[in-house]
Image 1 (cartoon, rainbow, N blue to C red):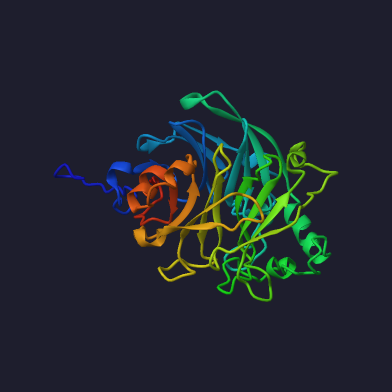
Image 2 (tube, rainbow, N blue to C red; image 1 turned 90 degrees about the vertical axis):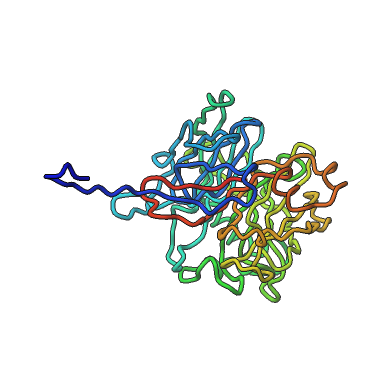
Length: 360
């Protein structure tokens, strides 16, 4: 800027997302660029979590723009891993809603270089009050020992399949990266309730199991889930696990799972490492009944074909699929009718002040 005599320069940081595949059905929610899971409040609003901090943001689902409110629980989560005076992220990757309570799940994994990241071993609960733009969250409690419980369960053959059948201790060891291409890493990205609406399904992106073949996605039911959030942190209780579920998702892990009020599930199955258009390193939608004895059903459209230059991270809500199954799952039906998806790592330009996340 210059007035002819003096001049001054000022750097404006901004970000831009890739062009929308279906503009009429696309919203740009501004403020963060790494949205990782979302929960519907109602037809018009949703809470969105980010895997880079602990703020839960309330967005209008129907219009693009900034969040209308934000609730940051960094100070409530007992985060002991500090970098530069700031707690490292919980890496929130999954969420599940039961009544007015929402549960938020950290990835429980190592860093991308294999370093231990204890802050990620968090799962916490919040309660919703109000509705629409006036919806608020209040903190309930947290549990810090889910990872420890899972490793002990597998190592000590509590599931009855053989000690270390899933190799969880080795997968979670320091030095092992969560996105190991062979599927041997440790990374939890999905959380949803079982058909009984009491047991919680903890769903793994990795490892792909069992150790001997690495062909199935792992889901571990937690049968006493609600009891894990009575304190901050909850002590004197450990997670109790039901029989593990191994799903054939074409060699992919669970990147998100959500169900509707009718008990119909949608799974975003995706790669354990970087995504490509080549199976199994692509994204595919599956429908499922939620019952361990039923195989998931692959829908016809591979999401990687949408060319969004990123990852499919979250389903906001699942409508009634029974009616939709009577029509062919064309690209427009999946994108416009079936669900809303948060996409990670869209093209960004100097995203220091404003980052955009495309919601379709």
